[in-house]
Amino acid sequence: MKLKEFYNNCVEAGIAGDRRGKAFITGLLKEEKKKYDKLEGFEKECYDVERLHNPYTDCRILYGDPNIQIKCMMVGIDAHADELLLANELRRRGKQVDVVLTHHPAGFAVKRLPEVMDIQTEQWIAFGVPTHLAEAMIEEKKTWAVRQFHVRNTDAPVDVARILDIPFMAAHTPADNWAAGYLQKRIDRVRPRTIGDLIDLLRDVPEYRYHAGLQAGPTLTCGSKENRAGKIYVDMTGGIMAGKNYLPELSKRGISTLVVMHIPDDAVDKAKEEKLNIIVAGHIASDTLGMNFLLDRALPKNVEVIECAGFKRFPRKAEKQGKGDD
Image 1: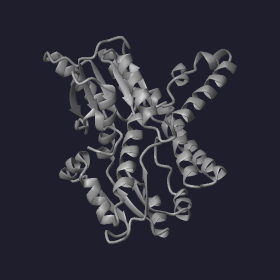
Image 2: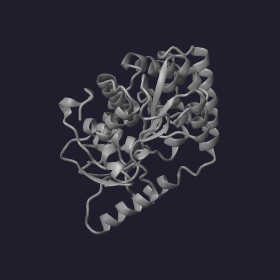
Image 3: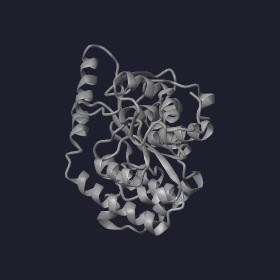
């Protein structure tokens, strides 16, 4: 398989796992094309043309020839400079490593990451949050995120890849879409009665069971195991968590429990005010779950995977993907 084929597969898989639906994504891409056609001069010259067919700005080939053949891929949740150096050392020892794939992006895939946060807007609207509130809340957080990412030296790992001549790629939201969708379907099907039942459900997933053994499994942050779970929302995709302001809006509309990858302290305080149940499933475990589903769909079985930087491979049978089964 060529790198560009794998990249395109990741985009297609991300769309297939996107809870907004393919028709919605098609509409977004058409709108992006209209914006592009109106650009002129320097703005058009600097435009990222991948946005015309890939709605996930945090999924990109960061360095390397798209036409290289992949026989062995190093995969990590945070596979950046250190992991690129590790890949180079393995090459020096005679081990073939064709590409390094990171979940958390680097380079320009980080700078444009706030754009995928609109996914959260649509999810909130689906729960009944008024459109103007949903858009205003996410816009505030997006503006904050842009400021944060612009001060970071996000290009450093890409420079390492370039100097060592190691193809380097990031796949963030396409994987997160699958983590969120898989868990939401599984929870909706099982309908756990209590928070304790919900935690047991999560611990039965291989990725969470594995990371629990590493002392990083699902943790109850707000509420009690004896509480009834009520309506459960899996909040695991859309770039970065939106903070605290959306929590009261979800509570007003019947959400009793949130399952998240991670949560900031101010959001914990707000959740306690709203009497919400919050389960932190685990950041690296949840990212590993999404990456496994993505690789199941995007990577042929004959490609070797080297696990690193927090990633652990748990392949699933293709015929069961999307059905909420392991």
